[in-house]
Every structure is written in structure tokens, then in C-alpha cells.
Image: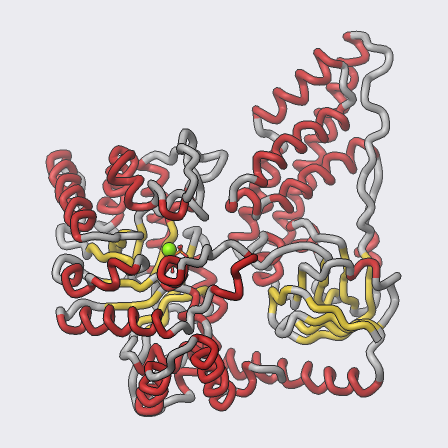
Length: 582
Ligand code: PEP
Ligand code: MG
């Protein structure tokens, strides 16, 4: 029996036979067209064009096949890969290399993809798309080199797929009737492959290191997507234990499903409103499916990417319109651009020594690119005529910033009025509380903001001086730190005193062990990743506001983060044991 630990990405316990997916890399042996004549280059060019067309068509067919089965987010990943085959920059490079330098098509493709890879590795957003790039390259090389890898189609028994890494299209085409789960050597929590697995509900563990070296295929495998564990050749005792867990997990999912239409209400009648965080408008459908009552955080900077480095007002408006259409009357909190640092870095953006502390987010919008900011404000205001839209400013660190941004909003309203364009005059303008200075000045800011939303992801980073994306200091990133609770308490009290709504949209909203103190602090609006809504709802329905208050008092009395963390986990385990092991 071998036990391996990795990163859990999709919850679930599954058992099946190992299916080792061929991880062979395509090898490009011939680099130059022979003979080096224009005619030979012409033929090579034709061969490339045929392969690119075939690869694009195959991606489109896959997209059509899985549409309806997967979220539109997934469909857009496939559409994106399909578009890469027609990217003018890519085509021009390959055609030039073949025509001028007599590269073989394979060599030209691999060279261009290697350049893309270097560029994409530099930024968080594109880094997460590297698997898309692999997919794109492999499919094209398959057509050029004439190899076929379709063995998954021959499955006749339930399997756990084991692979070095899975590309998004591989994850999208895994046959659900046979594939119980997958485990990979590589991968991260926020990759597109993980998104696909989540969307298709395939239990998965990634980042296992060398799981492909531990199997030859055919062994019995247990995959625990909750704990991030993969067990190869389990002994009978372990197998029996996991069979029991598998049955319990199935019951747990059924129980969550039964709560879908019920309110998130404590046992003593306190209603908590659960909203979803989204990056793309198409995610609204999934959010509603999970029971979201609206969108508490729309991260609009995801409208920007390498292919859309400068979205127009109409691009913004179209995206907001798509979200509103799906939401109906439900609220849509649109966060203005939070560009820079861990998010998309616009073209021409200066390299900084400390990007998290630099000219990013609202600072970039106010100090350097008011044109970009105004363009977005125009689109948000115009969208406000169509639905319950609210404006949220990120990373506000002083009253001056809030005042200046609000003045710009008013100015843009004047402009729209003059142009006769409709908007809602009293659209709420709120701020994120994610910088310690804002939390400490919450009483002042509350008099100038229509609502607060506490962004704990950054609040923790800035308060504890721990880079949220640096794995070397990951153990110091402690949301349960008493300092964070003090900042939450001060902010919530200030909002209450000045009678403005306050919510939390950082990841800890979706962590059940924080639910008790958040409810105890009086939080009644929480916004989180859609998939976490059902388990938070179940947790809320199991507690009373009175016991939540007691837990909050207890945690506020603790002096160190470890004690606080242990206390919260212990209480959460007592309340809903199904969250911890099965
Ligand atoms: C936060 O910082 O808590 C937040 C919700 O925003 P983001 O994760 O997008 O920085
Ligand atoms: Mg933030």
C-alpha cells in the first residue's frame, strides 16, 4: 500500500482501478524542411494550415459535445483554445518561420509556444492558463505528427485517471460514466483543469509530485479529494474504511442538495444572506444553482487579458449586461478595477519592486489612468439602469481616495446626463475594507460610503505583512490571527454605528470554521466562491446566534493565532463533523 498526499481540488471519495494516461511528449525530430526550396516551404505551409484547421475543428466539436454538461466558463476555455489556432500573431510567426527560415511546421509551432510559455509564466493570470497552452500545442502536434491518443474511449470499467498533468480539454472529455476521479503529478488549486473538474464534479487531487511513477495502471486506487490523499493498493482494512467514507460522502451530498431552496437561517431565526464571488459574468448561472442570492463581488479586472488588454466601455457594458440578465432583480456588486500585483498587469505598467504596495487597484485608477477608470464607471452607471447594480471600490486606504473616487462618479453621471444616457442616480458606492488603515478609520469612512465589504484575503496579507501568494511564508498567513478579529470587530461596529451594510467577501466567508465567529460578530451578508455556499448554509442552519456570540467572545479573548485556529476548528468539528473526515 502506498499513500501519497497532494492538493485537494474537488471534494469526494472515490475508488477505482488506476488508468495511467499516456503522458508521452510529442518529439519534434526534423527541424528544417528539406530541400530548402520555396516549393517545399509552400507544401509545408499547407500541411500546417490543414493541421491547424483540423485541431480547431476538433476543439469546436468537443465544445459542442460537452456544452450543456459543463458550465459556460468551461465552454469559454474551450472556445479560447479554439481561438488560439486562429490568432493572427501566432499564424504570422509560424508562416514566417516556415516561409523564410524553412522551419518544419512542428518546429515553428513549438518555438512559438515556447515563447508564449515564457511570457505567460510571468503573470499570475496567464500562469493559470499554461495548461490551455499545452492543450493547444499537443492537439496541433498530434495532427502534424499523425499520432492518436484516444485510449480513454475504450474504457469499460470505473477508473481513477492518473496523469502527469491534464489539459483542460482532457479534463473536459473524461467520460463521466467511467472516470471516478483523477490524480496528477502537477497542477494547482486555481488552474483551469481544477475549474473543469469542479464544474464536472470529478473528485481530484493534484500536485502529487510523482504519482505517475507509483503506478503502472490496473492497481486499485482510493482517491480522497477532501484530504488530498491517494492510496494505491490499499490493504483490506483501509479499503473497508474508505468504502464506508464513500457511502457517507454520497449521503452528505444528498443532504446538501436538499437544502438548496431553504434559507441560511440559524436555529434561533437569524437569516444570513449568502452571495457569490465571480470573475466572469457566465459564472452567475452556477452561482444561482448553488443558491446564491446575488453577486457580492464581481472581480471585473478579469475582463482584461493578453487578448483584451484594453476593453472598451461597450465591452464592460456587455459583460455587466450578461450578468444582470442572469441575475434578474438580484444584486450585482461590481468592483472597479483591481489591476496589478496578483491580478492582471496592464500593458505599459511599470515594473515595481513591491507590486502589492505599489500603484495598483484604486491607486492606478486615480493616479495614472483616470481615463480607464472613467470608462468603467460610465459602463457601470449605464448598467445600473438595467438592474440592482452597486459600485465597490477596492483597496481604499484613505478618506481622500474615497472622496476623489466619488467625485469622479458624480462627474461621470453629469456626462451621461448631458448625453441623455439613462442610469440610476442613487447607485450605491461602497468600499472594500482590505487595508489596515481603512479598517482603523472605518468610522470616518462609514460616513462617506454606502456600504462596506471586508476583503479578508488582502486584509490578512497587509495586516500580517505576509505576501498572500508566497508559498515560503504560507504558514504565516493566518486569517484566525487575533489582530484580524480586532480589525473585523472595529469595522463591523463602525458600520453598525453609522447604519451602513457590511459584508465579507474574502475567502474566509466560505470556510465553515469561520462561520461561527462571523455570525457572532453580527455578519448577516457573506459572499463566497459559489461551490462553498451549500456547506456554509448547512453550517448556519446548525447553529444559533447565541452560541455564535459566545464563540466570538471566546475567540476575541485569545492571544495567539494557533489557539484561535484550533478553537475554531474544534467548534466547527463539533457542529458539523461531516466537514472533517467522513
Ligand atoms: C480580498 O482581498 O479579500 C478580496 C475579496 O479581493 P481579491 O481576493 O480579489 O483581492
Ligand atoms: Mg483584495
